[in-house]
Amino acid sequence: MDKKNNPHVNHRERMRTRVAENSLDSLNEHEVLEYLLYPFIPRKDTNGIAHDLISKFGSLAAVLDSDPVALSAVKGMTKNASLYLSSMSSLARRYYSSKMLQKPKMETRGQILDYLKSFMSTLEEERIYAICVDSAGRLKERCELGKGTSDDCKLRVRELIMLCQNSQTKYVYLAHNHPSGIAKPSVEDIEFTKWAVTACEMMDVLLIDHIIIAKDGHYSFQQDGKLDEFRKSYLKFVDEGRISDRRN
Image (tube, rainbow, N blue to C red; front, side, top):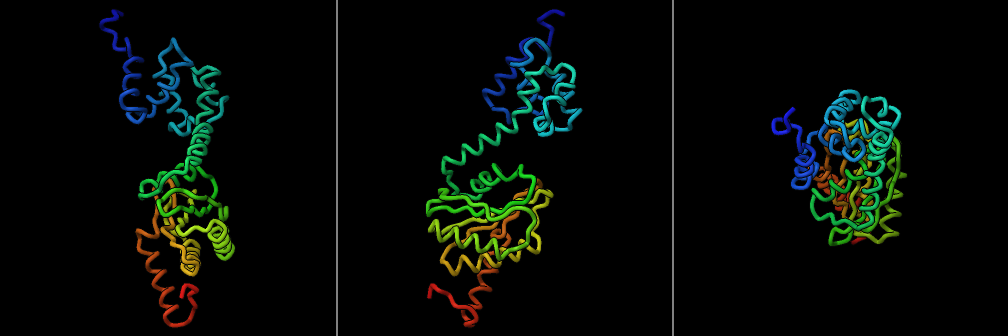
């Protein structure tokens, strides 16, 4: 075929230009795979291989989560290309772990959501964390309060109290994930949050939010008005003398 009429001429250079100007976000899933395969399959059309990978595994994430043997079974894939793609999910986890050490700022809802999703969106079991920040919104400490589906909220609240006392924090977020993919609080989630609000109020600590991270999105107790509702219930108990507030 005449090079002048061949649509594939300089295709890789055009793809590299797209990435340089607009990042990988500008590419479709199969194009991301096509681009990643360039260094490992230099003399073949990686577009077709990328389509075959998506067709077999179902999505970009599923491809990157696959083992090298399964990837190598796709026609055109080399051993080095398979090893490379299968290491990408592990690389992403290492990247986010390293990034967390930079004390990210969480002044906006978008920033706290990005931070939480960076390490919670791929967890395969339920875990709950307390995120302590300073008055400027910088991360001070992150502590895992529990894992699994345990509904022992008293134990988790005790861990939260100890964390706040040891770190001397005055501002804290709570966050946990729902591996089921549904960002809706359970009865146990609501009960735990009520206890957590009471504990924080008694310690003069501001519980900024309790956020649930799931594949279908997220849920915020603060945005839903639940934190204010729980605080009002606590203050009502204080006003009625049914519970003492150590701040008074």
